[in-house]
Length: 544
Image (tube, rainbow, N blue to C red; front, side, top):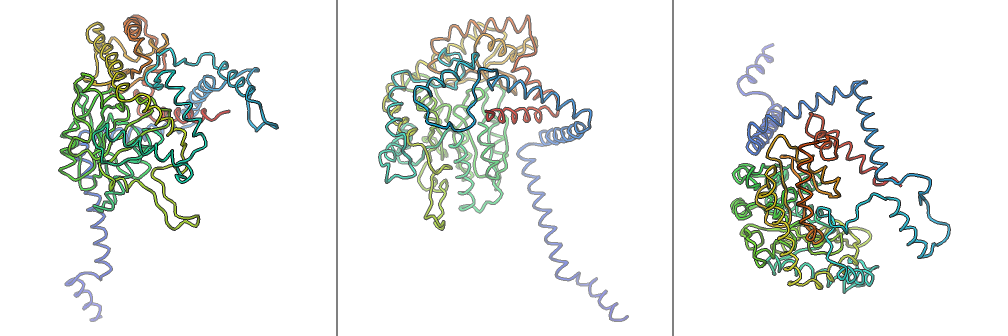
């Protein structure tokens, strides 16, 4: 009894056992870690935004629980079934005259038969868009028939080539290196480093991967975070999801459409690996304040990626073409990487982009190297292993064919056309306003009045044959001007005036833009349902 009392007194005097102390320390560490995460989140989002995020999440979860009730689930399934059927009717050819090729032919088909079958397939889609008419926003960046012939000849010459084997295809290796060198010089960093990729998304994803690995190796960061404008390309979110990185999405100024620099600064913390700016962004074609972002990146010793995928071969020529432009390239202190799509305004074949770094040391964190594989040492610069050398050859040919003077003239004509559209909206269409001050090829417009739904305007433009992009926050519509658009500017302005009149006098409320925006914004579960429709769209892509 005395011994028990003695142990009790000792525990009271000196505490519990070492195991109990360890448990207490672990709990304290976990609580501290959670507290730091919460503090960083609140600092980046702000108290009001955090409360709004929590409310949105709670409402969505409650509504999703309600939708699991049998009656509600049946209604949702019925509506989604209708959406699936509508997608398939639009995208998958129907009828007795449609031939489906679901298995290999027993014997080889002739080239004449193959070309004829392709003509039949094109004819099956009698309502498909003819991009040659120049009434689409972006999508096809056509450099002209003469350039197309040059590109196709180059691709045919290197149709079986693969940069994975530079010893077998040395010319492709040389062309790829020269494409990167040309872009680096164009963005004022001739001594930098880079690589070609399959497109802007892969260039951005590679940058995200690079900064994650750099921060882990150099700064010991194991819970990486990145800070991006809300107008940044969704590929940054995609890369963050792939590589386990937390994203802080920062609002933009409603007038300038530039990311809020003070909010970016507040969101940076010890786990931040990179910040992002666009020159130009996809939604409204505006440019962030790259100089201010560069100062933040330098101060905190973090990466600054400038997304010039859409600006590509327009932004570097603006100044020489006589258009004002704010600094955006490697001349800005703090800029450590830039993505540029050669297959946009560089008029290269689809499937080529360039990711550039300030120096080769940073590029090393992009590589994947495995020296221990039983198949031999494996090393690749980007996500892909085998890559189409034909695309590289076509890109090299396009850059050589266009040259500096060709891209300068292209910049002048495209940007002049975009400015004509913006000026017409400002001066001739009082119901609309232009978002921000777009410096290059994209013009986005929204409605000044609640009497006109700008997405109704977009749907009216669709009925006139135009294929534009609907935006949100705020609701808006944009056009990315290309060389195909240039001769159609006056027609666009005239149709836009008529579309505004139609949207005011006879709104339908049933167009694609209006319907999708309403589904996405009018209820707590809207985005979830839009996501399910998007999944059905992707499924339909593979329905033979």
